[in-house]
Length: 67
Image 1 (spheres, helix red, strand yellow):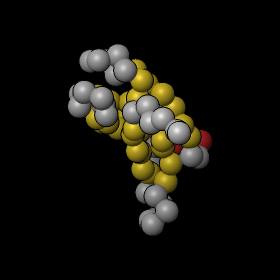
Image 2: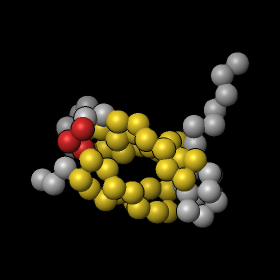
Image 3: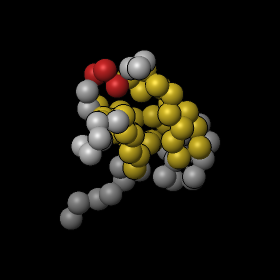
């Protein structure tokens, strides 16, 4: 399996779907990508599923505030 995969993600701010390249050979990683539609920052977590070890990507807006 090629460690670099193209994944389609959805912007948590505006819902626009776009593609990002993720290198799964680097283990768990955090990265930020700007949405090409609304220019908001998208927080991307890439790693492997704890259940079956398959490559997994999760996305959030990283705009939650801690009180």
